Image (cartoon, rainbow, N blue to C red):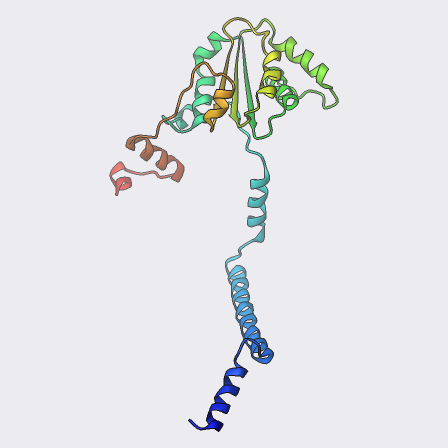
Length: 232
């Protein structure tokens, strides 16, 4: 290879090196063009199939909302081992509970464990009315005691996450006025929560068997038709 040939090859390498700004700008310009073409194609698809950006927004809003449960569940929707909340709902709504307890209370706790908020929820569950937002803690405590003291109650606290003993004990002191035989049922995802509360009895949900798993899948997927066709 002659000296001129080596010189020419070095010049070509230099031109396409990362340090050459012209080559870099050409390369980035090509990438930007490709990205724009892809975005335009996505936009065309959105217009063609009437996709809406609101679907994404509403879903994001849903993730921000704290999960909240209620006490009601249709019996036909209950499947063995369906879930902690479903099992608690089935137990709560059983006819025998109405005979056993004078007062039934359902409180969804989730991640925000505030004693004041829980007291307000208990009062709302007991009376069917939302407490005055201006009530201070002392007034809420008196109202709570007036509702539960002397009554044999069943209280469900669903989806509990809190492991702080101090907060639990401060709430427990307010609930000691119930009649003998009162019960508190707690659902939680963490065993440590139950240990913190010094729970009398722990019940661990098992996995669904094959039959119940198939029944649950049919319900969730909205499958209907002859069993033979569904199995296929």
